[in-house]
Structure formats: C-alpha cells, structure tokens
Image (cartoon, rainbow, N blue to C red; front, side, top):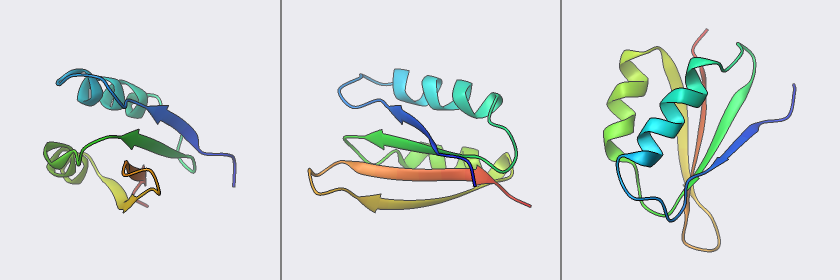
Amino acid sequence: MPDDTILDVCGLEPPEPLEQVLEALATLPHGQRLRMLIDREPRPLYSILDQNHFSYSTSHTDDYRYQILIWHKN
C-alpha cells in the first residue's frame, strides 16, 4: 500500500480545515488514504464522508489532536 497522504490542518479556523480536506479528497487516488491531523473533532465532516462514499476512522494522538484516516469505500 502506498504511503498515506498527510494533511495537517491544526490551528486553522473553520471552515478552512473542511475546505482543505474536501479539496484533498477530490484528487485522492483509489487505494490511497488521507491522514488528516486536526486539533478538534471535525464532526460535520463525517456525514460528508458518508454521503460521498468514503470510509474513515478517528483516533486521538498523544498530543491531544485528532487523526482521521480516510479512504474510498470499495
């Protein structure tokens, strides 16, 4: 599997993190994952991902950030 694409949007004010992740997902090749790092949970993003056929998992990092791993549903 190719390396994940990393998108660090920590410190950005809304709606910039959402805009950046949607832009990155628009060009994400099938079989590759996007690893989004953000300093708050992006709850509005989850329904957008569901509606656009993406899968995701959310976890906390050691430095209190969220890590959202996103990939195309098969």
